[in-house]
Structures are given as C-alpha cells and as structure tokens.
Length: 309
Image 1 (cartoon, rainbow, N blue to C red):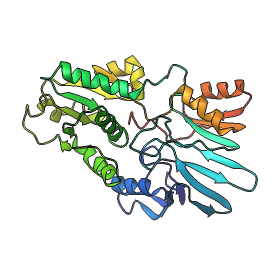
Image 2: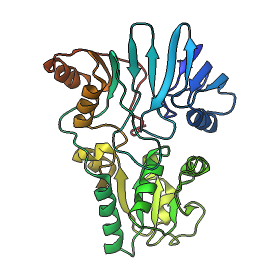
Image 3: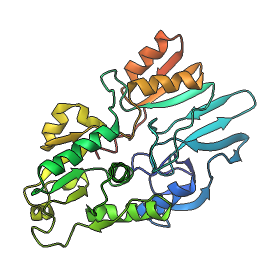
C-alpha cells in the first residue's frame, strides 16, 4: 500500500512498491526501483548512502549493509534512549555482489525469518556451483538452464560461477539483462553475458542459461537441446519444491540467513527484545524465549517470498 513516507530496505517487489510520496533508500536501491517501476514511481526520492544519517521527526535514521542484494540495507532508528534495528532481508555469507552484512548493537531487533526453522542449514554455495559445473562437464551435449530470480540471485550465481573459473559466455533470459547491466555499471564484474532469446534452435547446445523460474515452461526454452533443469534457491532444501518445478539439479543457494545465522545475528545485536517477521516466526520466537529474550511475532500484510513470486 502506498504511503506518504517510506524507508525502503531493498528493491525486491515484496519490499519496494511504486506510488509512495517520499522514498528514503540507498542510492542503489533507488536506482533499481527506478529501473523496475519508472522514474516517476515515487513523488520524491531521497538517497541515503550507508553510514550517513538524517533526522526524521526527531529520530536519527541511518542505513547499514544487509548483504541481501545490491543496495540492501538495515534501518537503524535512534532516539535519546533507544536503538531499534529493522533488518529487512539479510544473508551472512559474504559475496562480491553487495557489501557484507554489518551486525549492529541495539535494544530492539526486528528480524526476518524466511528460513526460521532448524531444518534450514544452508551449504557452502561454492560447493553447489561445483555441482552445476560438474554436471555441465558430464553432459556437454545438453544445455543447462538454471532458474534464478532476476534481481540479486541471478547476479550472485553468475559471480559464484566466475569465482569457480568458468569464463565462457553465460546466456540470459531477456528479463535479466537490465538488472545485470545495472550491477555491472555499479562495479560488479559478471564477465561476458549474452541474451538467450532470438537465437535459432540448437544454438544453446552445451551452454549455460539463466532464466526466471516462471519461464521454465515457456515456448522460448524449447530451442534448447534437451536442457538439464536446475534451480538456485534456499527452498531447494525441500525436495518436494524441486519435484514441483521438475528440477533435476537443485542448488541450495540462498540470499537469506539460515537458522544458525538467524540465531547468531540475534546474539550479536545484544538486543533484549526481538520482533520476528516474514517467515517461520513461531520457531524463532520460541528460541528467543529459551535464551531469556523478550520476543513476539510481527505479522505484516502483503508479504511474500520474492523467490517464489
């Protein structure tokens, strides 16, 4: 729902909407919002780089790296006697596509809980990428099409692939091109990228193609030679999700904190009160209570997991 004043943590569609009167966010988030929704999608834009502060009705507001996607930020709200941190979405595994998460001491910590169950223990993403590259080596006659969300996940997966030494062109569904261009303009090197659409049938034989999950069954994918279907998501931990999409090569790569990282982060904030939202609130609230912390679920309307959208 549009509001008069909005502080935007990052540019994913479940956090950033068009129609607000005044938007305060990092320069990168504002750039991505303009790219996604148009220059006039807010009446007024106010850029706030990491570590700088602004006074809003007597409250000092500053933004700090969340490590989720390019431009993602935690919001620190400071008054005379209280510090509150709103995490937005965050991950703790550092990568080259955005500044790493910075733990902040506070009195109240509002945390996401997308993967807020003990079953979610994310593996090393480099190991997951090596599974992909091994499959490409073992099946050189087949295309490999990996489903990734267009903003954040696509660029992170490309960066991880480059770190593992794969330097061939990577082909992109058209929906990803603008986002990747934005990342490269902002100093994130993704190597040689090519558009996958508009090519003759068979041209992508043996190639790596990235596409949004919603496009896996679209007609354009038929030009690929018997593709091996993969998906990069934290939800690939759940085998039923992989079967639901017909995924042969599930890659557990998440841009959210897993259970251990959520607990670690709560400890590092030294907050005495925890508000939990966006996910499995009850389990994390219960864990906080076992640690002697005051905790409560914060149920927000209109939230959904961006990776599933």
